[in-house]
Image 1: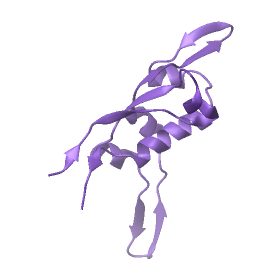
Image 2 (image 1 turned 30 degrees about the vertical axis):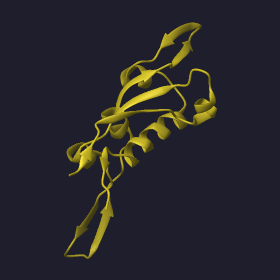
Image 3 (image 1 turned 180 degrees about the vertical axis):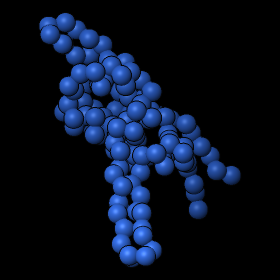
Length: 117
């Protein structure tokens, strides 16, 4: 039997966030095969020329498809506090690219399948 979980709460390590009293946490869902196909890098070969090309891995698709909700993420925008809860909220502001990448790569590198040989 294959045991599957559908998601997790991820605590990014960016800027020592994982050591904070109230760390930023991200609820993520594990991507299914169809979602992954829309995100991953693929090798497209041409049998006639024996050449090929890699398509781009799309971090924004991993991020948009995998993030469910943010916890404990607030920013100050033009001297006003703003709570970030959704992907749309996060992408509406120039937040740190390192945090964005860490979350997207975590979604790319995880799945809900636990297979024991």
